[in-house]
Image 1: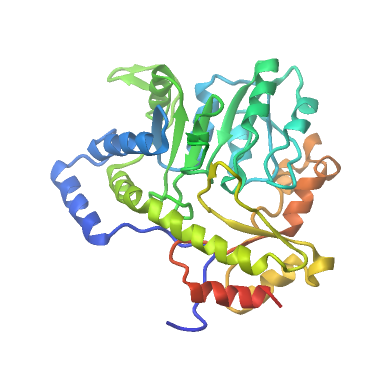
Image 2: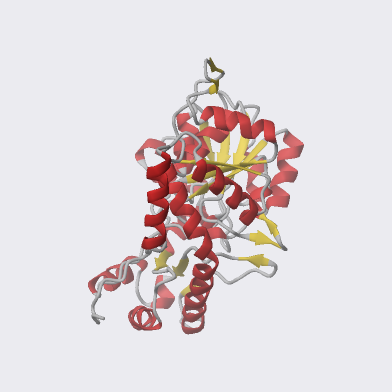
Length: 371
């Protein structure tokens, strides 16, 4: 293998091609490519069992479940409290529903929304809270739910990073009113593109399924202005195969994380996230946070240094969503109100993390990081 090969920040988990070809042959025989077909039903059942959730609905990507969750809960004309430290799809879903995002600062230790800052952001127009399990680290769900219950608010978790994560054996996807997942190619578990919406009861699951199929509740009945966001049979079959190997992939990711942590634990100016007791992590990312004065180099300088060695890291999340022109004008986007999120965005660098990283790959990355 080339010593100077490109090491990407992530790499997709791929199913066995021959097994996938057999499933494709079966799909060709069935001549049923979409619209709640055989493999779609099988994947929903398999994921519900694996994730330990009662109801799950598959989508064609990870953004549409966020948009649909707000629709399914009938949230209209108001404000949604959320985090600026996330991928922009989180906030876009709010805007697409004609709702106003209100940004709240985050915890320095986790990057998750700070529950102690939520109450101050609540107004008579607040409809819901949309936290993110950043890097797969669970939010303080208990405290967030307590606040939501006091003020009569809905809670929708963006759990795009949190596939398979549980706390004391219980899936974090069961928290709040709904949780959403992304099955994008960059995620721990992928269906090439895809996503899912998790809910608590059968009636809500039916409404979600109507909404993702143009609002059809029957052959001739449309009950809502839905959209077409169904997952097809090909990606469903691909997802079934990847589900068989995701545990092995997570174990390999854990090994990579342990190598990073052991090597970086005494490097001045570098902080990383450690495992939390009782949490089954999925090691979706390996972010480090760089304090320039102590490390002796800025985050951006290290990013460029790695790139020159054909090692692709990612400043994730940078810039903050609140700094994008489309959201910059919001009152809650003022950087003075978001000091911790701003700090993390300026310090963060995600090192390469995926199941196929070899020990030699990790050593090569660390040689650049550890000056």
